[in-house]
Image (cartoon, rainbow, N blue to C red; front, side):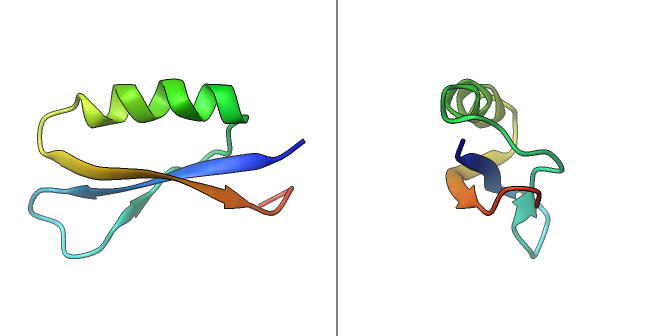
Length: 53
């Protein structure tokens, strides 16, 4: 199974934020939409990661 994390930019932060957990492909799409809907969040990306990371 492939694993994915979210990367995003948050207003007022100088570095990109990274999700603490990994998601399946379908769950990553759901959480991407939820994250993108938050105030001050932009440029949400799904990034494939190695299993166990």
